[in-house]
Length: 255
Image 1 (cartoon, rainbow, N blue to C red):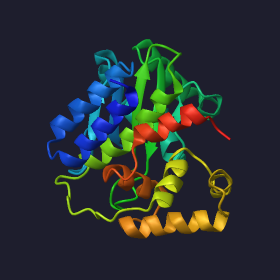
Image 2 (image 1 turned 30 degrees about the vertical axis):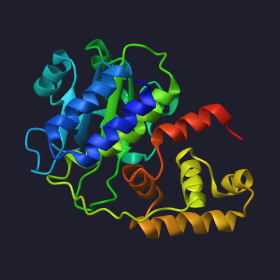
Image 3 (image 1 turned 120 degrees about the vertical axis):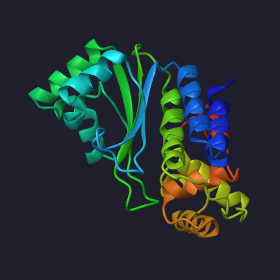
Image 4 (image 1 turned 90 degrees about the vertical axis):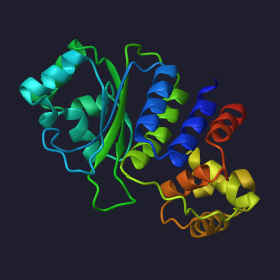
């Protein structure tokens, strides 16, 4: 199955299912299909005494699990600490990330690599839907340094759905069913591709102000308050398709 269709399939599962085991298994299937041997989606809490609402999902090498247990490494994990300071997904090989590490953190990263955690990618998660939830992150790891960029894009989006689904004991199915206009959908698809209001206006031949108005109207229609939330909600409601957004990006190219 195409990676983007696989992502859409996972999103539909995460939205519709109430079974956390099913959702976690589906995410593991997607990660494996994309070439990631290991992954974790965790609230940033003390794993030895987690609060009831914490999410603690891990598929890491046994050697690293033993390392964390014996040394208490998770408390000083440089990946988790960096994820708390940034909103931007990052690779563990990124120079900016590596420069931020002190000697002890470098040592932890080297031990992780010795255990088989080689090329990692982490999505910071700062839950906007509940101020009571702690910060979190979702990481995937591969042994290959050559992974197609669009596969990381898939992980970036479905990580948010995974954490959202796992941090809610019962999903609410009373979501808004309001339909977006064609222009609102076009604007949201371009926002999902990382375009600014000005660039969207140039592509659609409308003013930057009009683009902003369409996005704000879409947020009100779908009952959300941020751009990230409106993209997630629009995909949940099949107003836009994640696969279509990425495929159109590949076909047309950036401008």
